[in-house]
Image (cartoon, rainbow over all chains, first blue to last red; front, side, top):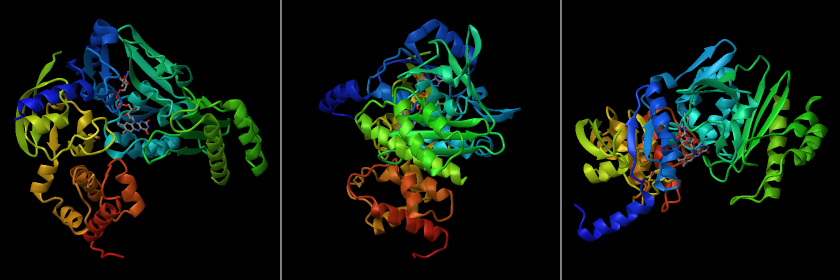
Length: 295
Length: 162
Ligand SMILES: Cc1cc2nc3c(=O)[nH]c(=O)nc-3n(C[C@H](O)[C@H](O)[C@H](O)COP(=O)(O)OP(=O)(O)OC[C@H]3O[C@@H](n4cnc5c(N)ncnc54)[C@H](O)[C@@H]3O)c2cc1C
Ligand code: FES
Ligand code: FES
């Protein structure tokens, strides 16, 4: 039992570090989610892994009236190959993606990226779709799906649509998702034979969001370099990639590192200023290019 | 859809049924409703790991779950893991290696380390550090914690210290 004095302290505490009041809906089907979203619009939020949403609630950065818990919807989970695509259900946990032999073989870039996301206990809850919906500019998976030309499947009561990763990420924490839409699955094109993938990032502490990161995918059709932590969304480095197009050599790596100034103009943040971030991006580009050369 | 929710779950092997406020976190539910105060509420936004427990066999952050979500779930807390004897050797190693001072982080670290132990084998010190990177300790400086976990892994694998 709490004493009256502690009750009062507790009450004050609850106004600052506890979630606000909300109604809770345990959704057992997508139809139920669509109805609730259509009815409550911006007042409702989808609760997936909760590893970004719940901290935001506890810090009162977000005060939705209704949480729609999609965790019971089994149809949103799982990883399977469908022809030339690897389909990842939106609710698939980071730890399942990381442990999947299919992902390791057919989407090695994603396999390499997962251990950089937070810590084991957070990866056991956080979901693939939740990371993309959250669209944190320093997050690993948005950069991966952009580098891999993945397609996101979005659904609402109005119907379904497919949006390419390129069109999905719009601005800081802003995506193509409409307030009544749910990400149901992500299709990742299967890596062709001979694909080389390298994922590297720098963070102050293991598991932190990246200071700067790079998802690099080398295919016969070309080299895709996507940086994250350097802008308000993942950034494709076209000039640097062009500098390496004729094959990776030591001189071309230096040229690509110089060219990076045309691709990136990182804003500074609490962790590093823009010039430091550009420098670190060049360091990562050098590491990734040398790894690709050796692969 | 409601601001209070009826849940039935298993906590440390015992059936529990309660009506909870939708906004109540799992860590507050355990501490305040069930009196299970081994699970700590530290940062309450997923960063420190003090609230780590097992949900359906996998370690999670209890501050980032609402009790309302747990209908049908099975929870194991440090109280359950202690009582079952599953981590008796790990606890003894923490004692022996001085791997705790104030003890605030200890329950979370024991539960997390138990998940690493369940994988079997003897991880390197770097792997142990990596696995426990989401659990903060403000007192020990971590070395003794890594020592204790490493010693337990070795003992379970039948290998003596190097
Ligand atoms: C300490 C800590 C460290 C972390 N470090 C990292 C890190 O290094 N890198 C990283 O990438 N992430 C990190 N995360 C975040 C983690 O990866 C989250 O799991 C992820 O960002 C969000 O996924 P979620 O399933 O938890 O989504 P939730 O938190 O449940 O939801 C996030 C947002 O997405 C919306 N949403 C979720 N699913 C869907 C869907 N299917 N359709 C439409 N909208 C949806 C929600 O409404 C909400 O707005 C960290 C988290 C913590 C607590
Ligand atoms: S209290 Fe849950 S991680 Fe800090
Ligand atoms: S022993 Fe005090 S925080 Fe770890």
